[in-house]
Amino acid sequence: MANEKTFDLENAKQLHPLLEKFLSSYGEQSQDPAWLVNALQNEHPEKTPEEIQNLAQGIRDSVDIWNDNMASLNQACAEGTSKENWLADRLQEAAIETPVNEYGADLTKLGTALHAANNAALAEVEGFPSPNSPSSIATPVPEGSIPAEEWTPDQAHSAAAHIGKEVDVHNLAGMVLQNGWKFVDALPEKAGFQGIKQVADALRSGDDHGVKEAATAALQTGIERGYVPLLPKTTPISVVSGVACYGVEQAKIMLQYAEGDISGQKALELSGRTAIAVIAHPLTKKFEAIGARLGQKAGMAVGAMVSTVLPVLAPVATAVGGFIGGVVGKVAGSSIGQTIRRGAEKIVEVAKPVLKAAWEGVKNVGRSIVSGVKNFFESIFG
Image (cartoon, rainbow, N blue to C red):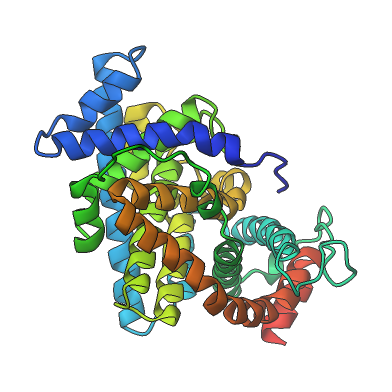
């Protein structure tokens, strides 16, 4: 799924004040349970009190779901399950009522889109082929080329796990290219700004629910105002919160890495998990009730989500989420912000060889996806 829209410096400058406002509101009123409602009402005078209450509760609930998903993913990894297999399990759970051949077709569409996005991203990384080179050209899957009899649950699980590998590649490419982070350097400095202690404390302690709420509220407001052209104004809160929470997680990871609390390899692994979580997040069943309360299609069928939303989530997360992570660090204070930025710059050299190896591992399978499902399965099981 091609998307001609981008998130550029001008969009970053538009989103920046909103992030500062909501994070400042959190810092100033974090002891007040109504801080999020008050901040949303100030930015959305056109909404009724009931709409504001529902939106605030939806944001809180969505951050709870994100944290639950991250806890589940981290626990699975601690027990020996790969992040890719965790994603495959989550995708299959979401598609439990979908016939396996339809689910397989959805995965093929998603794999095609992600592989094309990776080709485009890697063309910007020094040492990788351009997307126009013969080895990188993606061939669309012809209509009717998906034979239903080939889709078994085991094959579908392997295809879903491959989706996770493509997501990991895109996240690594985003780290190498500094997607989103580079825009933070162009933001104006506030004279005399000392930072928001509550944000800094949250990044260090991990008790960051309020920071994630503020980031989600800011991104939701920015999307409604057209500041994030990658996402339509009707984007469900399940998608918005995933991107915002990803950004906050990236800030924490880069802080831990820069301060020597974790190694570069561990930072890459943790970052990859958050990218995987972004894909699984909007498919969580709990969003059906939240979406109904907000009048959104937050609990849409897995097929619709895979076809319309998930293909752009990896690029959105690395660009918009990376920017959010940088701003959160900057708002926490110049010292902590510079440390986070240093971590994001330092990780580039660590990520490059890992990206190369990861791409070598998925590119042939990815080309098989886009040239037909039968070849894809043969490349896995042959």
